[in-house]
Length: 146
Ligand SMILES: Nc1nc2c(c(=O)[nH]1)N=C([C@H](O)[C@H](O)COP(=O)(O)OP(=O)(O)OP(=O)(O)O)CN2
Ligand SMILES: [Zn+2]
Image (cartoon, rainbow, N blue to C red; front, side, top):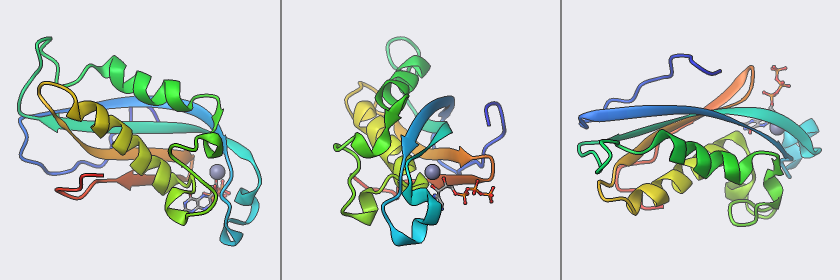
């Protein structure tokens, strides 16, 4: 849901920003337990990405909002998630494109970008809504260098 209030995470940083974005994508979950979700179907995913840090960059940004959108929307919008072999596969449950794994993947993509910036903020949380009734929160553990 765009413009909703998301669960907050306590942290010691001076700045925190949040970016909402959405993308349309198809997926299937290749597990017996997934029932109907084993069949290819689509969602409009809503994501909220939380980034925090103590230092701003030369533009006065923690990170440019538009870059966060570009990193995720251009990568996943109008794709079949299962076809993205860099992030997902059909062999390892930790790489099936479930809400949990997609949320973690978004966090990893954002953090890889942030690691290359001058001020190096942290991605603290990804909220990912898959359906009107289902969402996941992913928060990397401190020191998790995925
Ligand atoms: N822990 C998880 N459980 C399920 C996932 C998932 O990613 N993580 N995914 C699915 C399906 O892919 C499906 O897209 C979502 O399932 P669900 O919330 O059950 O969708 P419904 O619209 O059928 O739910 P209602 O309760 O009828 O609104 C399944 N489980
Ligand atoms: Zn699904």
